[in-house]
Amino acid sequence: MEKSSRNRSVSFLELFYDLVYVVVVAAAASTLAHDITWRSVGEFAVVFGLIWLAWTNSTILHDLHGNEDLRTRTFIFAQMLLPVWLAVYVGDAGQDGGQGFALIYAGYFTLLTWLWFTVRRQDDGVFDVITRRYLAVMVLIVATMIGSAWLPAAQRVLVWALVIVVWMVSALVISRTTMDTSAPGFFVGDSLVERFGLFTIIVLGEVVVGVVDGLRNVVRELLTVATGLVALTIGFGLWWNYFDLTRGRHPREQPTGISIWMFVHLPLTMSIAAAGAAMVVVVEHASEDRTPAGASWLLTAAVAVGLVSLAGVVRTLEAYESLRVIYGPTLRVMVVAAVVALFVGRHRGRCVGLRVESLAANRGGCRDIGLTMS
Image 1 (cartoon, rainbow, N blue to C red):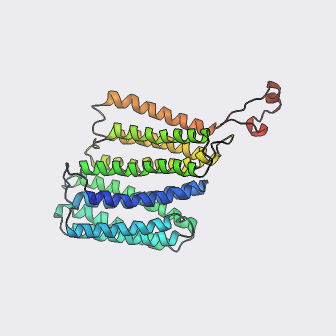
Image 2 (cartoon, one colour):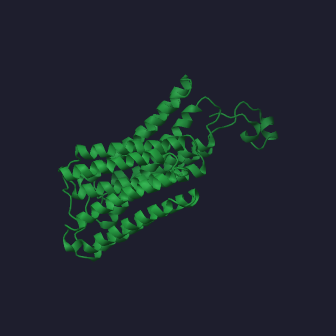
Image 3 (spheres, one colour):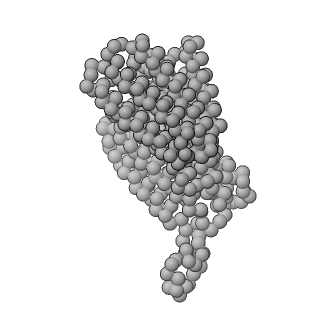
């Protein structure tokens, strides 16, 4: 397992590869936007987690061992074809499309497993223990995804969630292995930091797509347009905070610290994509008295999770201690903002135009009286 160059730049090939995930994430977010329920949110979280897991494995592989030769380009293009097919099934992966999604995903991970195996044959023997364990986990994921294809939909999604958890726990265990052996530790170079930033931009694009989709489906009145602009500022704010706080900064060079830095990006990017899905509904219902409960909770919870996750990313940076005077107060404000966002989701309207006598006679509040204000 060779080390990538710390100062290596992201190639145009990698940028082209990342564009494929624009389509995959968009398909998952679009499905959620049209059916916001507890079940659909859970299915979205699991499917997004699998998408992120596939992207992360391929990204790390190329960052460590990729170059611009014919072989690398050929296999990158092959990896691009499979996520395209995933996008076809991702919309109903939690239901009827689950079998197709599982089998294509297994095929994708089979290709990645083989690529990791070819790299292992060229590695120094000092990496044998680490790479053997990593490959064992990859094979386990392939077998599990194939087996899940014939399970009922609800059980299949639970198995997929278990796949994500197993991979994360295994990665932490394998990271600790480097601390107990003579194998050199894995570090994050400039290119990998940039790739994670680029993936964050990809999901931020879903915020813009969500606002545009919402505005396309309604009469564009002043209130609706203003709601869309406010929704866009949420995406702008997340971009502003992420790149001001993390741009070009590396995680601590500790095996588990690097793993945690990567893992915290999962809820961060997932929450941004979910916020984009919620914005479709929020904009569509901007002229109504009250935002639908599902969209309200999804948007505010996504913002809260995004802020807390971003705070977690910042805590893993090697610059955190030297910039504690800046980071400390900023992270506290972000946590408070997350709480405020949840409060807004809980109280998404208030009673208006009622006399004191009416309030006293209807202690149930707005829910019973039926007069609300967004």
